[in-house]
Image (cartoon, rainbow, N blue to C red; front, side, top):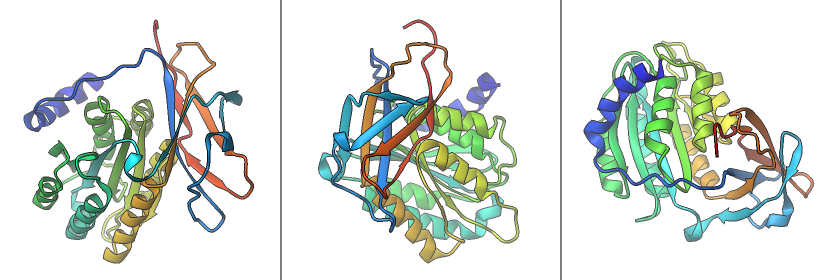
Length: 298
């Protein structure tokens, strides 16, 4: 099935992609975890140190080998894929989506340091603009998007993670604007989540609802929770849509990066649960729930 899916998607990618950056492979299996920490009022906590955190894998405490505050100009490079639902069910909301998405990239991307790509999906998945540092190119691409037919949400997530974000380094983020109602994908939601987790992708979902069609915001919430992101219901309101993008912007700019080498040396490809704790009371940590271990020979 995946061979068939790749054969259908790859021509669309390669038509627009051009030269790719080389894939960097680590010789040691480091598990990377991006997280945010907030108090009971929802305020971000920006001044934590490595010793404030504890991380557990399948209940076993791990040593935090790498630690960083992903704030300001010193934060790791950010790679964003903007995944825009252009199916008929959100056609009447597309202009709002385009305006808010364009503003989001303008406010989020640091010049010559952060990149973004634009993908639209309906009955087909199209790479509208490959990764670029140039905001003006991204803006033009966003406003060139046209509405289409059915919805291949799960296929789009799988393709963006596997074909676009896989070779990238640094912080990898996918922002999805959709009603969440998949109607035509070849792969399951579980496999889409697994692929995002395997490629260290954090997913943020923004629900865009049309009253004339079904929606499934529960799926968008599921993708966000599993990968350490967040979901926001814009209620198809331009003001709330901008607010949702603003919240994602703030969350991206208030991340901590933790890295560890797992004490589990098995290479069985199994799902491993991650739990991050902070040694201060009353704080909530948001992070991805797990990852899939390595497979095969080292």
